[in-house]
Length: 75
Image (tube, rainbow, N blue to C red; front, side):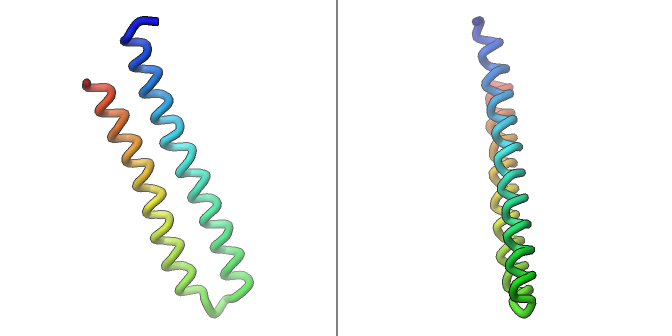
């Protein structure tokens, strides 16, 4: 396999894992947060704050994957 093809394969793997894994994490965060709010509605503001922070961190991972794939593309 030539180096150019390997570079594009690496970019594809980085972007694939970099989008699928955070998407799964955000789905799990949302479902567990909804379960927690359903069980204890009085704690909803605290749970929502924690959920928003966790979703932001998971989304940051996806942005890091995008940056890595762009670095791989232009190197």
